[in-house]
Length: 308
Image 1 (cartoon, rainbow, N blue to C red):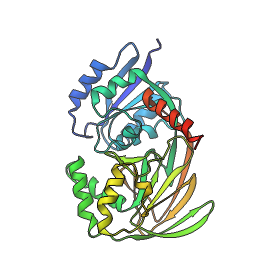
Image 2 (cartoon, rainbow, N blue to C red):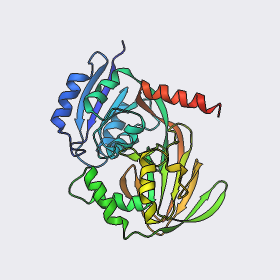
Image 3 (tube, rainbow, N blue to C red):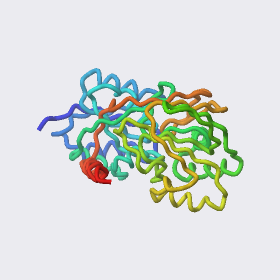
């Protein structure tokens, strides 16, 4: 059996799990005959990127990110275009990419799953050349991301508070979208650019999105009556939001979005990217460790789709 040289990067301020416990679980459940690992803790923004890039340059086989979508984004950024694979132990607030990949949310089970995981290649998306791997957005969800980042505490309850706090004062904005097929204008509450299928917490904004199809699912949520909110919420968590008359979706590998604001979010983290944002796909530019069950489901879905 080949032992994988592995670096484990832990964000000490991500999630609510005690990091001493996480380290103990890794020591207990990650087989040393399969993974020759050492652990590093991040000390600030972009440190995970630096650690991951250095590990890739040094020939590590695997870099495991322990944290939320922001930590995963930083770690994955350092691995783009390298042979080193990304692994995920999700302990963040939403865990959108981890949930899409069907990685267990229980830390012990997530660690154990590495023994039976395999490498697949996924697309990397960029917004004005800044990478994201799951979902980016402009509009309402970008505002929520910026407000959430300013809160003293994290977690689902804090996020829900921010969602509701901004909802009643937020008005739809005008956007100009340019694709290779043409230009159009849209007034929308938000526009989500989905590589993965969900924001996190099983809120599925793009149920049919694939990480390896070379395309971004662009989801435009238009204004809706407050009375429609419960139905939309149900559809969002029931993987049927793409059936709503208030959501328009198209796929593209290269497009631009113009907005009046300058803010956006990438994988749930706030960014100021400017009034014009260019989105691109780097096909299969990242190696990632995923459970065999996810790969089996992916292959089954692909096989069935050929007969539709």
